[in-house]
Length: 145
Image 1: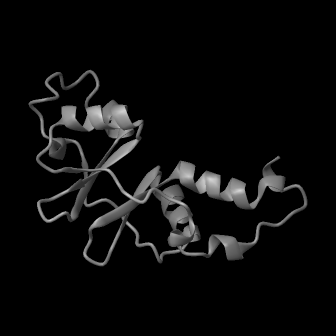
Image 2 (image 1 turned 90 degrees about the vertical axis):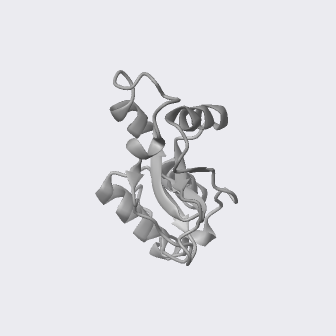
Image 3 (image 1 turned 60 degrees about the vertical axis):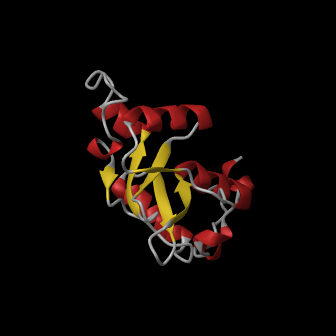
């Protein structure tokens, strides 16, 4: 690391310390795969959080899900529910969980997106690997340059 040490203090801060989107894009579990792909394409997003009728987190659909479970397999995107391909009950965190814990979970689980929920399991934002890298670059630019 170029002779410098990253301070663990920065990585032990809560996720709320990071600048993340204020509003998370969600779709109801009854939405179609076409709804999900259209939303992801129009908003240039890598994932969409899936909720039930009470706005509780029930799943997530990612670009990887679409590539592995849809492309070349399912042709009727309007007729198929996202519940058929979403990751059900995804790993989620809360805004007071540490950034280092988020990094560990992403690394060990091979995850690129983690929903952040409140105490009622309602999605409040989404942390992506891109957010993590940006955060590290903002705090340790001389290590990476």
